[in-house]
Image (tube, rainbow, N blue to C red):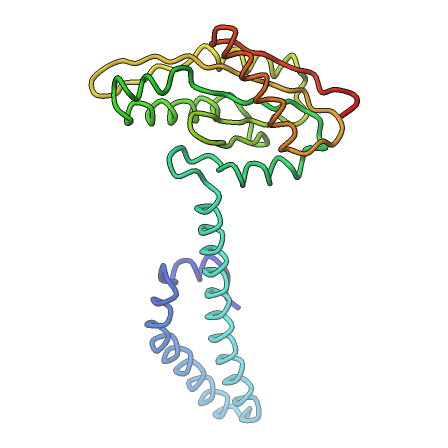
Length: 240
């Protein structure tokens, strides 16, 4: 096999490119093998010539299959990422969020569910594009305030969830307070502002992610009913 840097330098960007270049690579390898065959013959090492040729062919096809396998794995990862992402915001979709959060739910932390206040009215007054811009801005704000180990996903409509593993309730409350202050976007030549309501639940034990979401969404409903632009945080019942 050849060094990865050499492969990256010579390799095309697609499997088809490799297939098209195979005759060239084959000619080069065979030429090198034949030259070695002649040289070995001249110094009386004819018995090694066939082994050298076989090794050259094995190296050629081994390199080819190595690169093809790497390209296929890269393509599979990209397809999986596309299938797991919300097409508008780029964060995880609900299914992918629940799967990712469910795998680490045993790491006690805090689950936040956010919702853009009066998004329906904004869409009615300024067009659906304004609401989409707000969702994009909120998703970006969530990325800015979270760590790489945190999980962010769009649940549906104007709702985004964040799971903060290993984060104390006090720190989570600070993050939620910064989020509730809202976002400011430019859409259709207008500056639009929107506040955020947040429902939160402190995670203890090993409840299911769907159960936690229901508790957080109830807290969110309470935040909405109490005037919006606020954070309602609930502790996880010991009986659950």
